[in-house]
Length: 492
Image (cartoon, rainbow, N blue to C red; front, top):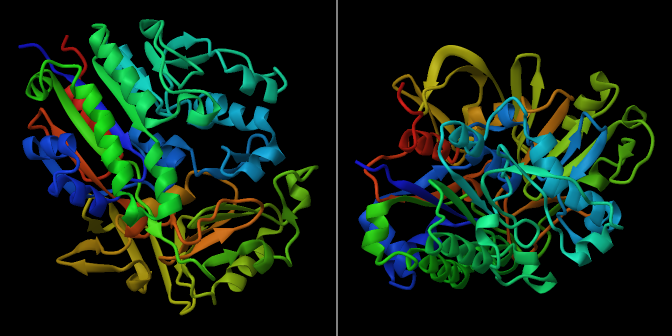
């Protein structure tokens, strides 16, 4: 029996309620079709922080940040001793420059930032003898050498300094920056007003064209980015028009087959979000970390000189933030915690003390300590022990099993974020409706935001169709393991 091919669609910031609405009212027919024909889940847990580079890295590697080493959208690189920013805001791009921003996102994220000792799904599948394709998904690392052809406007803005190969799968599409030889002559909506091809329509037209040309790979990852920006502007609970548009784009892919039923006979499909978003109020919703921590000498985006000249650097990731302690840990780290712990807008303040992890609730200062030990098992089968107040992460023990409510998979996700780097640091997660700010970081008052540990940012829907094979666990990192089981290593 011929093995089915696999197509995975990731819709950025897909909110479970919006997904429910559009699949139940008939306004998203292809999503409703796949949901009716397949297996549907409404509470799949994203990685932490719930930021796109971290979540997509978890999808591509099957691991949390402690393994893949991508700790957020804005973070401090221990190797370069500089701040990494993938272009969160126009102000950040102006400060860093187009060269550094594009280099970080297009080159460094895959070639340097993702742990080289962990393999992506493209690398594993191609080693197994399968063909693999990547359309606009930012975590593209594979075995084949590819030479990007950047648009002239980007090359000029980067002073013609961006050059060199990337390594991706056989079929690699990164907007108009990199086009698979199998798509020679393909034209989709591109240029500066269409994000140079990084849009839903370009992604799905490229995927459908591969199918029509008879070049469909065994696995094809198709990323639909538009809903993230729409949800930021309009709010995640108002994103129905954008998700309906995503549905129309996905229809173009299934329409490349003789029928939708035929598409299910030939392929296994997965449609899901990478993370969700939380509504943010219009006024007084921003935690100004740069002002709150003004007593510490702070390394900023363009600070010069050795990092050890500074006490801290602040990396806000919307509703999550990382405060790196660069020197005098014994006094600076407790000082940061003490300064922030009285603020009730902060849900969790988290840091490591040796092998143990401390968590304090902002405002109440309730405290929890947890560590790895075979005393209690959580719902994903991971063992822990703890002392203190579990309500800090909305946890409870029932029949010897750790359950988490509003902060799903809390212990594993907090631990993975803290274990992703060595530099001492304090992690912050905001209560619903609030965001963190410092140094040209993105904020979305009156719209939607993400990054935090809370379920509003962390829970996504997923639909699997064309297969009876379900996810091994309800986490975005398990999309990888589901794929590996559908396309196994050849038997010897």
